[in-house]
Image (cartoon, helix red, strand yellow):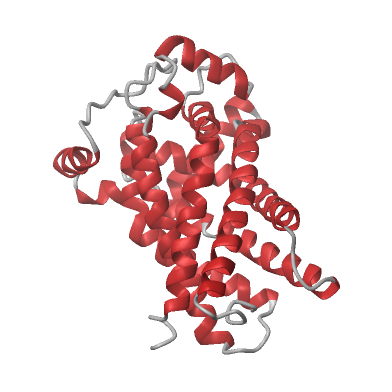
Length: 307
C-alpha cells in the first residue's frame, strides 16, 4: 500500500500533469482544427491551416482557444490520474526489477481504464464547450448554450440523464490502447537508448516521445473520430441508435464514414491530430522527464527514478 500512496508516484503524477498542460496550451489551436474536421463533415477546407484561418475569420482571433480552460482542467486531472496509476502499478508489480515491454503495456492499459472511467464526464463536457458557438456547416447539429463547466454538467444531467456524461465510453475504452501503445513504445525505446548511453538528452526524449505517439495515434485514429462524434452527441442519430456508445453505434458510425468518404474518411483530420499530438506528447514527455529528474535530485532521491 505504501508504494501506491508514495511520494514518488505523486511526483510523477504532478510532473505528467504539468507537462501535458504546458504542451496542450502551446498546440491547442491544432486540436480545435482537428475536432472541427472530425465532427463537422460539411467543411470544404480539408487542411489544418485552412480550417484555422476560417475559424479565425468567422469567429474571431481567440476562437482557436475556445474551451481552453475546461480542456486544460480535464487534461490535468486525466494525466494526473494516468501517471499516478501507471507509476503506482509499476512500483507494486515490478518491485525493483527491470520492467518489460509486456508489463508496460498491461500497466498502461489498466491505468487507462481507470482514467477513462473517472474522467469521461469531464471530456464529454469539454467537447461540447469547445464546439459551443462554432459555426457548423452541418445542419443536423443541435446547438448548445452552457454557461460553464458546472452549468454544462447540470444541463446534460437534466436533459439527457446522468449516463449521457459517459457518452462515448465504449470507444474510449478501446482507445485506452492509445496511451498504452504510446507508453509501451516510449518505455521500450527509452530502454534501448539507455543501453547505449548513460543519460538521455532533451532531444532524445522529444524524439522518442514523438515516435511513440505517432505510432499510437495512427493505429487508433478511426476510433477517435467515432469518440468525438459520440461525445459531442449532438448529431441527430437514428432513434434506434439513441443509446450512444454501444458497439452497434461504433460500427454504425464507422460504416457511415466509410460509405460516405471511403476509408480515408476514417482518417479525416489525422494530419492536424498527428501534428498536434506528436508535438504535444513529445513536449509533455520532455517536461515530465525534466521535472521528475529535477524534483528527485532536489529531494535527494537521485536514483529513485531510474526504472
